[in-house]
Length: 391
Image 1 (cartoon, rainbow, N blue to C red):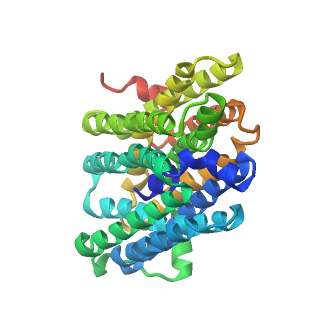
Image 2: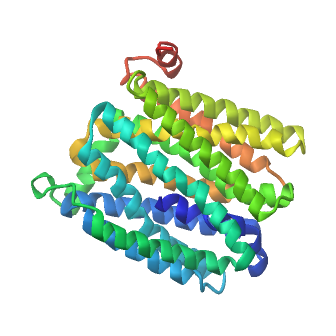
Image 3: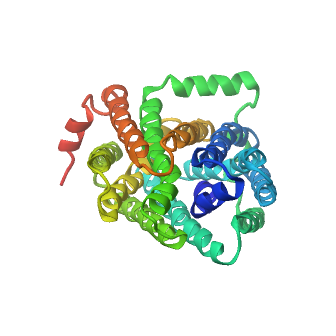
């Protein structure tokens, strides 16, 4: 849950932070980018390290870093130190994300791997539901500083829980040599393997579509449509609930329909939803529901693309689970960090940059999987693969 906790809890406070610091929305969105850069880079560090020394110690170090970074964020006096501290917070939280995926790969394989990634999505999906609601409600009683104090408390609880109840899942005989050349060679091997690269890149881009929505939605809903922070948090939580529902549907279907077909279905729904959103925004200032409905379908498809993308990418690389999970996180959060500032280029009174970025990324994700992945999964493109799926 470290990703959504780090990203979503303070979203209702975006306009408030911008007003307090007397800056433009794009400068506050950079703090989101900094956190996602940390979440991406931290996974590149923690993933290979966990392949070398085990899962527990890197996780505990990460949770300690997240707790300390959150505490310091609460006292940031201006946007620049807040941005730097958000980077530290993301670096710590990254360990939780990458090691959770590596632990699942340690314990499961095959269809069970995809099913348990769907279960993991259920747990992580609670974050985007709970986090903005908690953040919005905290703003009734405290300022945005109190939100970061709350995150520090959550980090402390997770640190204690991991220290007491998480067993080591990677025995010494299964660990890899930890030299830098060996780590780089492992990354190179994964990046040159089409069965890893195609789903990893496409899944990363599909997730960055959601990050574009995350970065822009506080201003689109609260400034453009005038909803309160509490109402925004409920809208955001509804979309996150769609991710949970879709991931659990995926968990039930994955034993009967191959993961790559479900993955393609998610890409298609996301692409159609993004193009619909772009048409709605270009048309003009339509009712809130006209904007919220395509966003719901776009966000929900992460419940298909993320677990199946993870399962496909890691299935053929059990000994590189930590490194593979790190690259998956790098693609997701790295691309998210790049798109977050783009959606704020038009200011806080237009949704057009958000819609353009989401549509462009959705189509790019589909094209990448079509060209890189069609030869790996049956020699068929996404449309052909989907059409042959059992009903």
